[in-house]
Length: 627
Ligand SMILES: [Cu+2]
Image 1 (cartoon, helix red, strand yellow):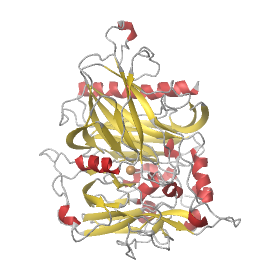
Image 2 (cartoon, rainbow, N blue to C red; image 1 turned 45 degrees about the horizontal axis):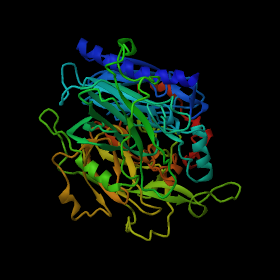
Image 3 (tube, rainbow, N blue to C red; image 1 turned 120 degrees about the horizontal axis):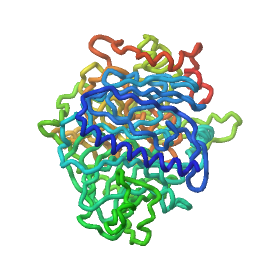
Image 4 (cartoon, rainbow, N blue to C red; image 1 turned 90 degrees about the horizontal axis):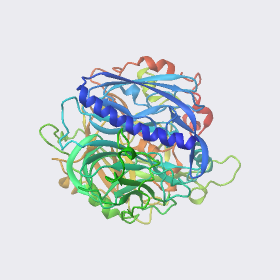
């Protein structure tokens, strides 16, 4: 059966990772080049009693683990054997001077067309922890994703007691229907995409869903050990609470950056975020099993997937015969029925809209800020930006005269500073490199809203229309940047996860209501703020981040996350293509063209002979083949 082979492959990925970790530790390997082969292909998978064909890498769902040590070079040969255009993004990898390898279609590269291939080459510099990779076009990331495990350099210990084992734990979403059809329908109607039917842990839905007990993620552990869970939220839309019954989790890392350790019963993780947590097992065999569960945190008034995914923490029974215990890694399996008679405890998760829990949790996150791992927070700021983030509308453009399914018959549109991003037909980095940006993008992205208003006030403004544009903000190389992201309540306040490509940033402040430029900056944490690559903008609130523009190239900031990780509300999901992206375009001191195209670039696609008007590209299947 397709489902059982998929189950085995997802379990074997983890086992292989653990074995690899042990081998590396034994070898004390030096920096090397790690080569991977990613065959993008269609694979039949069964979940929730339904079988469908999904896009996978190497037939695995979730996909293979990419393992590297800090300092290693990585080469991934992606061969597209699927019928879709595709590109792969290495989420959180800094991509210093390797912007061509970042992966967002139409931004840093043309998508890899069916039958073609592309070699991603990059070095992992100054990062260690957990990141992840995923498809970066349309909704293919729903099934095309996998972990990136970055170990410290050989001989460099973790700044905490070494765990006995390490296990990737990826959260995802599952739709019964074809996800490309889901997003296509939403783009056609102007309404929101249908919400997912289940959440997953390592691709498995678990016993709380119909006919899914056999698809349960099981973490088999021994008493008195420490396990490091490499948590990854690969869900498209939802922030998630996560908890393991009767156990605590010690957070030691977020987004591949160490934090001051703190211990919780429940954590919250936004789409795109990662976190390493230590799980200390009970000192003796407890004679019980423990459910690990994840479900959404949301304050939306729209529809969302209000279900819970469960996995099981099972202790190795010392009384069972040795042959019953796997002689290989004791990690996961999905067919261990030895403990069926044991009591199973369930965790208690916060209320689904518990915003104060989330605020308390995020306030605990602090950079380690040690001598070895200092927090280089920019103290003096060269460039300030204030971006409103939220939802608006486009007029309905349905060809047949019927109304659209957004507010008052309009189409939903997400925007930053009221600009809704329009995907170009030429990859932006390519246009920049070729000196042919004219007609592809403009450099007048507003640093502040053109019209100020009470961003989180009620009633909201009457005019909810947003403008379209492919606009970038240009930063001088080396500039210290402060960016305040302000949620709006124009069509309902909601939390928006936002993500920066090519950079980590410090979260120096956040709050509810409107940002107060006179008084809020005095409360910023400029000593040990958490550093990361993805942050949730609080619903009806703001967050302030700082970073140094030290990575030449075209990077996507903030809005890509509205595109990548829209909020659970129907509204934001609507405009996957049209979602605002601000593209920050950092110039090197030596000029605009320091980046060279890598060898793989040539095969990635070609310039359209007649670039289509950008506006017409939105959501249009035909234009996908143009670039
Ligand atoms: Cu990313």
